[in-house]
Image (cartoon, rainbow, N blue to C red; front, top):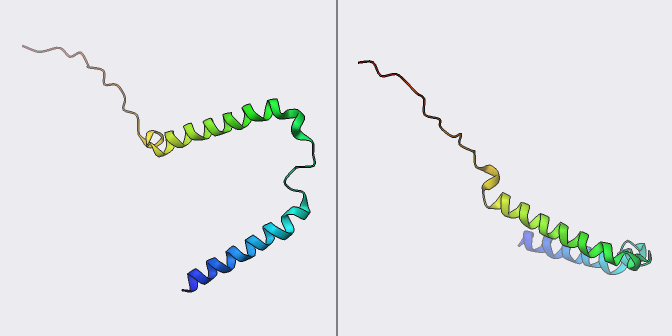
Length: 81
């Protein structure tokens, strides 16, 4: 019950901050006029998304943690008769 009440309290505090304080800080960058760079922003966002997806697949797929095995080279030995 205490964890649930703590979660509710945290949600209310963060929600109040987002509704009241955040719009007053202009951190959303809406007033910078970035519309002229839209042709650059879309490819950058897509490349970040695709790169993050590939890295996530590589990491969570287990390929990042597999040890590579060295190729075994058969040694040539003389047979003694």
